[in-house]
Image (tube, rainbow, N blue to C red; front, top):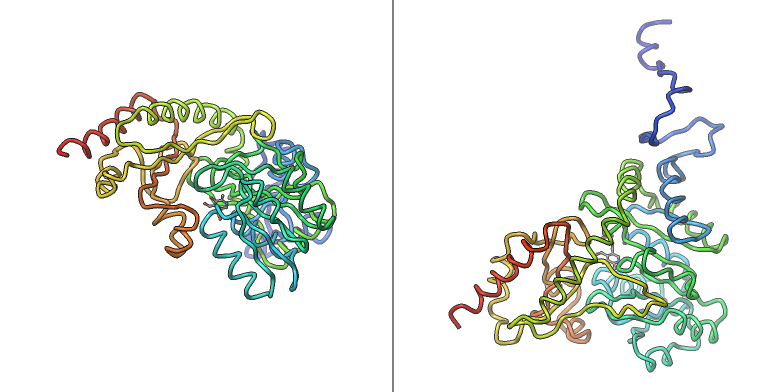
Length: 372
Ligand code: PLP
């Protein structure tokens, strides 16, 4: 055989290699006899990660996508023209814009309700096809009763789908499928990654039919997670519970400290009812007192241990202004309708020493109030 043919064809024999973790299958093609077929359809790293999510969610199926938004888009593809989508008013800004655009383009009715109230749940329309909401919500971490929403929607239409964006609770603290949701979805970019270095999305369900639809949509729309990201996410999941618990503990200390602070108007932290939501990790909101609204930027700049930007739920602490960050794609009227003001601060607490974080926050509060 010519040496250049050998260059092209040579492969090391890995039959007995037996690595202790699954290597990255950085390939697009598999041989014709392989069950994986083609990486846009399936890949061993993606499948392993999906099995991990099934174990955590106690679900029959998991479908991993390239980002959280890809997971949401994949879910929207279950809708058809003439259907009626219901969403909660408090929702991630990009999700809101996607719902508006998607529904306008495909002639789907869109209703925006406050599902954290009984009146909102009562207002779920008779022709509902899908209800999609986050709980706790982004922003304000308000809770929505999944079983009440599910009961109402399915009483109107037994085929209505209930989809919960469970990114902020994660399956460690809330399992939407046990409370009547058909699909739980996640931005894996947040807690599952935890290190601000990989993007991903996850859909979990107990329905074989829904899983088939979601996989099919992922295949034809090219929305599968890539093998490298799947491998990184799988590694991150080894420390998931430890990170969640440590960040949760630190966040509760910051929450209680903020509640005592001069200059803080209100702290937003979810209600842990022990039934639907059994715990919480990080991500909390607070409003600066109105008298300090002009000092917002100075407050953020005075913080040295909190990085700014869109990252959150990661091992390093972050600070962000939802008004111009996570909800920048919504217009002022939409933000006003959801009660989103420029005074709202979002904190994500990482794994730094808690006394350092408190000292940093304390210093920032002193700075903005020193020459009042
Ligand atoms: N869902 C929630 C609650 C989010 O906060 C985000 C992003 O911040 C998304 C979905 C979208 O996820 P991704 O950024 O991974 O596409």
